Length: 123
Image (cartoon, rainbow, N blue to C red; front, side):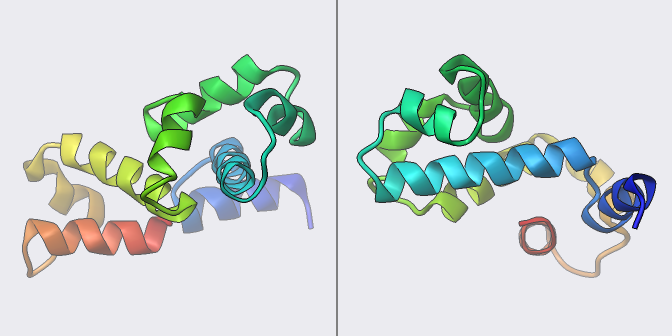
């Protein structure tokens, strides 16, 4: 199995680059550690091999649209997977409705179904 094959598979199947998928997995793992441990953000970043906490915070902002401190607050009412799905829905809602049929094909149902379909295939 070559690196090129894995990168092509990620792009074709998951519609993301390999680095985007890895970043999403690290953010999900960090969210799970926030939920299930008493470690602070710096300790979590070090456990996940980030060079520093600010690198992890940058990945959180890229994936979720908010930083680590806000994620901890939101974890009181949501699961890690719910936070990732909510962030993905915000991105999709920012895409003009007219572009969605081009992006996902011509769906014979409404906008909410397109969003749900996109979230289930993406997350």
